[in-house]
Length: 356
Image (cartoon, rainbow, N blue to C red; front, side):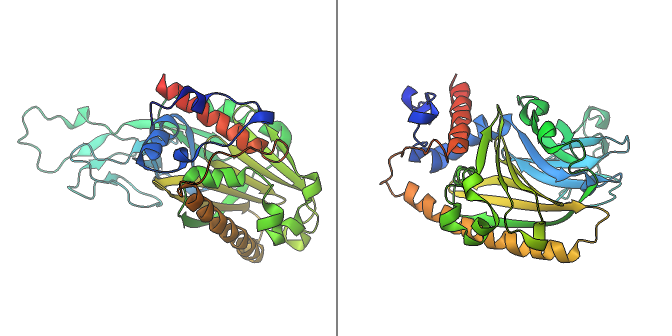
C-alpha cells in the first residue's frame, strides 16, 4: 500500500474527478495506512467539556491504536495521557468516570497523579536504580473549541486552522452553555471512509432517507468546502416542534469528526476505525444546559436512530460492493459530491506525505 502508483494519488479537479479506488477501503494494508498517515497525524474529538468539569473527571479514547485517558488535573488543566502503564502496559482507566483521585494500573497497582507522575510502585524497593520520580506517562496535545475537547498525537495542523471560518458562520453565541446529555454508538461493517463518504453528500438523501428528505429543502441543499472542513446546509422545511425554524448545518472536520447543528441541539459524530472493513460511529447529543430537554432529547434520539439505521444499511451494502472485485472507481457528481471530492483530495495529500 505504501507503493501506490503515482496516478492513484494524483490530485484531481472536481469536474473530472473519480472516487477513490476500491483497494483503499478494504484489507489490512489500507487499515494500517490510515492509522499511520491519517489518525496518527490529526485532531480527534474525544469529549464535551461538561464531561470533564471537575478534578479527576476523565474520558477514555483510542487514537491510531493508542489508548488515551483525558483527565481534569488538580492544576485545572486537561491532560491527555497515554492510558498505558509504564511497568508492563496495563490499563489505567477502563471507562469514563468522575472525581478520580489517582490513576491506578489495573494490572499491578502502579499509581499515577492526574498529571501523569508516578506516585507509587508496589514492592519495587529491590529494583536497583529504580526511581519513581523518573517515570511519567507520556502526554498528547489537547485543545478545546466551543467546549469540544480534541486530542492530537503527532504532527497535526493547528486546530484553529481546521476550524477557520466556522465561528463566523455560526455566530459568537452558538453552542455556548450546552451540556452533554447522551451517547449512542453504532458498530458498522464498513471501512470508516465509506461512512464519511456517505455523510459528505446529500445526493443519497432523496433515495435513502424519506423522513429526512421531507424535513430538508433538497433543492436548496448547498455544500461549501474550506481548507480542512466542509459544510452542508439546508433550510428546515417541516421540522415542526422537533427542531423548529432555521437551518440544518452539517460540518465535517478532517478526518472523521462531524458537527450536526440544528436549532437548540448539537450532535457530534466520531467515526472510529475498528480494523479492516469495520468502524464505530459515536453520536453525542448536547443541548442547552438550562433547558428541560428530556422529551425533546428522546424524540431527537428516535429520529436520529431512524436516519442512522438507514445509513448503516447502505454503508454496509457499499462495503460489500467495494470488496466484490467488480467496482472500478466511478465519476463523482460535481454539484452533489464536492464534499466527497474534498475529502478524497485530503486523503490523497495525506497518503502522498506519508509515502514521501
